Image 1 (cartoon, one colour):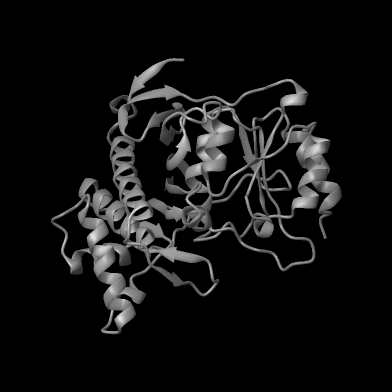
Image 2 (cartoon, helix red, strand yellow):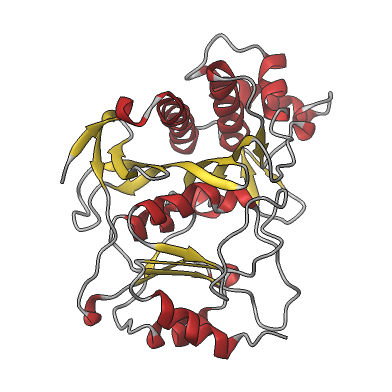
Length: 339
């Protein structure tokens, strides 16, 4: 496998990687320490100090690189403002967390940076799509989560960076080092790096194992996707090995470096259509595509990032090594007939 330097991918990729590494460091400091504090989001998924701190760090880092590119971010700073005990306590913890990597930021700068993630996306120009912590359940379980960043240009994802602070660098060496990053630039391939030594990138590629080694990667908790339908589709695609289970866009990394070969994010039968958020897929999608794989929705349509903050024109997501893709899509057509 060829090693290249991060600089060879250009200034924008370098800035994005540096920002994600800093945010990943903040997240790990919070995850391991006593800064932890969960506030409940409307949808009841836990969100942490690290979520806000990571968004502040990444947006301020990216603004320092090029302040003209706006960000579509998941969080805003509303719950950090005001004099209530909760807001005051959360705010001070977020500031403490940010200061572990950016000691000069003031409270006002931190809140302003978080709130700058309010861009609404669209089909023209450039913007970042940021999920400061994807996989909050994994984070709280001391398991897999990801700092996910994508750059969208005129509706197309052109750059993606994932920081997976708890992911093994080598899935087959359970005692080995953790803390893995991925970067992909349109037309220039996908690379893996260690979060603590990002200067050297190693090419990441999808893999094509014998059928008995084909593996699906899916969420740890079944709330996110329809597991029984998943099993039927995986079987149709020739998958027989037990699933690799992990939360977050780390799943895209697993497909991109060949640990798994199919990732399905399926609508739940009988439920109202859920529009996927662009920040849940922008960074991860290009990782798989540039590693040689394929990403579409369940009907085989390309994901459309030009329609605002959600993939409103798509239903679910299928990411694969490319080779098993058509079989998966054909099986899905039987499960989800077009109305």
